[in-house]
Amino acid sequence: MLIKPGVQMRTLQTQTLLAMLAADFLLHGELVVTAVSDGAHSPGSLHYVGYAFDCRLPEHPDSFVKELRLRLGQEFDVVPEKDHVHVEYQPKGRAA
Image 1 (spheres, rainbow, N blue to C red):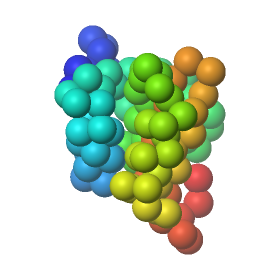
Image 2 (image 1 turned 60 degrees about the vertical axis):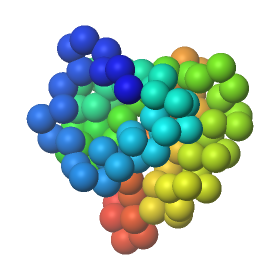
Image 3 (image 1 turned 180 degrees about the vertical axis):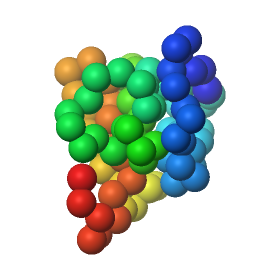
Image 4 (image 1 turned 90 degrees about the vertical axis):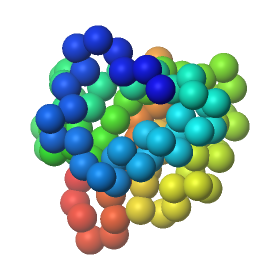
């Protein structure tokens, strides 16, 4: 796993770290984390409280997203964006 320089992880939550490790496993140690609690995100974003991270798009983003969703389960959202993948821990009953 690579953490992009400047990424702030002060608020990183255990669930987020576990999701990062699962993603890194799927990418054979090639995960690049591009944001946790840093950067500009929407108001109320789970990034600011350490329950979300972004990573670079892997070579095969569709299969990566599908497999990560299977591994993490329904309490996580895995969302492919134009230039990254957004992953957040959001169990039922927890508002975004």
